[in-house]
Picture 1 (spheres, rainbow, N blue to C red):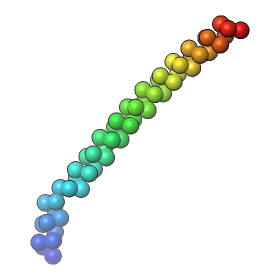
Picture 2: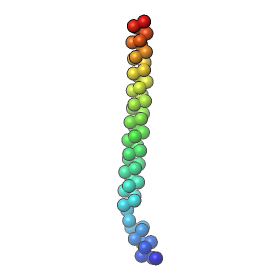
Picture 3: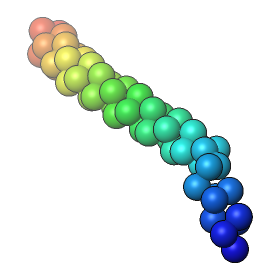
Picture 4: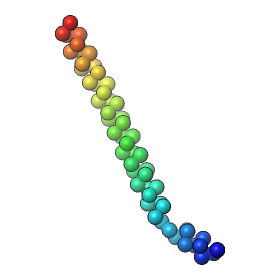
Length: 54
């Protein structure tokens, strides 16, 4: 039992997977923020074009 616990404590493969997951989550949050800001600007642009054509 003691060797099993010490092997579990030394195993870092799960920590690497968690780190990659956190990096992916951070990148996805950044992409969502950029797309949301770009969407707002595009909406404003298309609204002004639409009102200019009327």
